[in-house]
Image 1: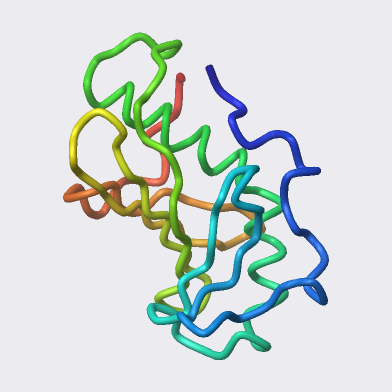
Image 2 (image 1 turned 180 degrees about the horizontal axis):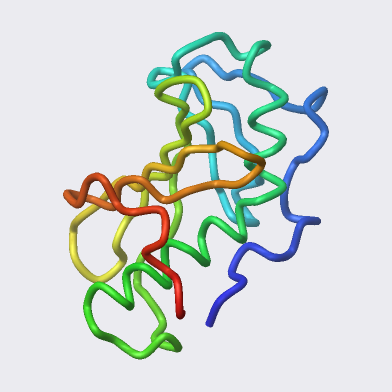
Length: 142
């Protein structure tokens, strides 16, 4: 159920291979793989400045997605093993030390954003869709 993005060979992890296309996207995985892009229309600084943070996020993307899925299941009272119908579509960086993951739902025409803050060498879930100010200890005992 978890570890959807654990195959790191499907990611473009070398920043020298990242290309900013004419639409403001940098693809960090191919269309035949995960098909995930960074949307620079919603980023707080330049592509070159963000490369190290993008690389860090790519390295932790599986962990971030697992957190999103655990939180979603916990919020709805579902089994922790429940599969979700959401997939990661876009990544953006709204301000320093923050990353937004945009999810799209496959069975309902909807999407939602999840915001993480990186501090003390760890990513903390801050917002999930309309839920704001998520406490850092939300997952204790999970």
